[in-house]
Image (cartoon, rainbow, N blue to C red; front, side, top):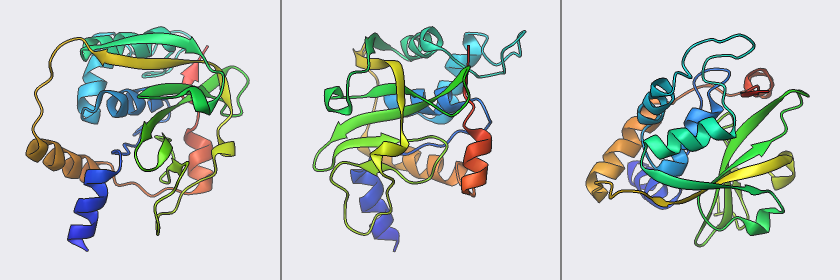
Amino acid sequence: MGSEMYIRHRTLPLHLHQRESYDCGVASVAMAANVAYEDAKSAFDALGLNLKKQGRHPYSSNFKNVQDALQKLGYSTSMRRFQSWDHIQGPTIVKVDNGHPRNWHWVYATRESPWGLVVLDPDWPDPHFENPPLDVVYIPLDRFKPKGSMVVVERPRKALEASPASGVARAFRAIARNKRLFTPSAAAEHMQCGDV
């Protein structure tokens, strides 16, 4: 069992989960930048997004906030209009409808061989795969309703230190920290990430 998990998490993108009602942007930035949740949260803290402001919940985020957090983590970004899932070629944070007229939710999407499009929702335990691996529970793509634009992570602005051993160890630590029980009602309650 342990080796299956090791192989699975070495080959599948790391799926991080949000920890609060409005921090889907933090988890999505962490996945896009391939950093620990705490590192992405520190970038949001440095931008003052950890503070409750009039009409805005702590860690709720808009496009500029997501781009600024990625910049603090050393990445260049661009904002593009969402046209279709087929246009996603690399790390991208997509704004999706969460059922609230003035709010939205962030998800992380990328293309990974051999699965094609992979969409990871920080508020849901199951990923979406264009070409799903065997024996992995996944959700249909039509669950996500993109709204407007998306943030494309272009490239690191500076060289980031990474070693395969530390990356695997960090992935397992992140998985242990992010264990959380998910139910459909919990997902509906938490999918309120962006404020207008």
